[in-house]
Image 1 (cartoon, rainbow, N blue to C red):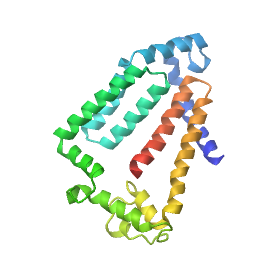
Image 2 (image 1 turned 30 degrees about the vertical axis):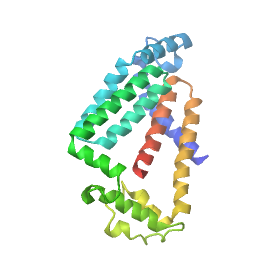
Image 3 (image 1 turned 60 degrees about the vertical axis):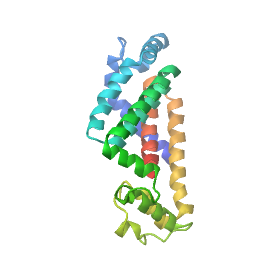
Image 4 (image 1 turned 45 degrees about the vertical axis):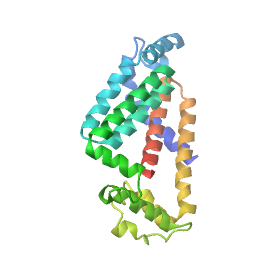
Length: 231
């Protein structure tokens, strides 16, 4: 109930703040007050033609990719595709986009050194991986494993003090797992599933397509950001 109330207040605040921009969607003002036929025609026009989606998403993602900020680019891409899918995107457009993204990822991994190093450190944390590239992943695995079922106790973690970098942000889950243990840290994961369930419930019961897409975007953002960091 508390999670549901918090998410609903967040969604309502964002919808209220962005409400004025909806006047640009059609000639009849706010999408919430547009007729079903008019709203359907606007909705269909934007989901059958993927070009506007690609352009807008590219304007946001490409500058981040050039920084380079691969993590934020991945999160933004997942949010955009999720909202586009819920909006009614055609399967063939999503399939073409998937293969295009896969092709681009292969090019980036094979041609850019730091991208290849990050991919290697994520996919191969064994002894064959170069120590400098896999240091964070290895120390995170040690932290999670050393916590066992019940953990070492709050403030008793060793990895965060000496070995685990970024223990207060990127690797906070690993640091927490060492202190809380598996039986307690699993409730953090369950909490994110609850947030996802309640967020999609709110999206499904929204009054307009705009509010539904806002709810989906925020829910995917919160949940996917969490699980990317956990992974």
